[in-house]
Length: 216
Image (cartoon, rainbow, N blue to C red; front, side):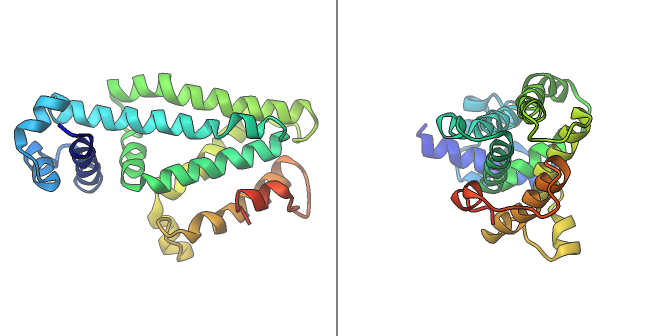
């Protein structure tokens, strides 16, 4: 099977799992959407369950990779700019994999053996990496001292909410999270939040990191 065919099957499955849910999606549906023989789903992915689990882990692997951004580039950045760069990268990653992001975030709210395993493996690593930046900022006096767990929860919520609950933005703010302009507009609010709530700056500033990653 060519890599192109394999990706077509994964993309079709992600769309169907997102719109119809796991139980509402059949192997036949996936094969029809990908325009492949139904036997290929079972042969190459071990069936619907195997394909579903692969999509979950693939997304979270990519999510963690997006957090790393360019490690050489951010070495010279302070904690504030590292946090902005990381959040921007995660927003871009989720927008690029919109259906998959919606599917995974929804499934991660369920209690299952798979979700527990993914939580302990991937989300624990996410927490560790973000916490490291927050503690660095507090240690250097860049961020105001406050409960770290409270900050972590807020950051995760701001990064995932646009793709976990896009209808919230669409209905209340008339913003479509799939549009190219969304990240630039939303990032302006992230800058204000970080500067006011973490850095204690009453008037959010703009510096080289903002223009370089196009956050404002």
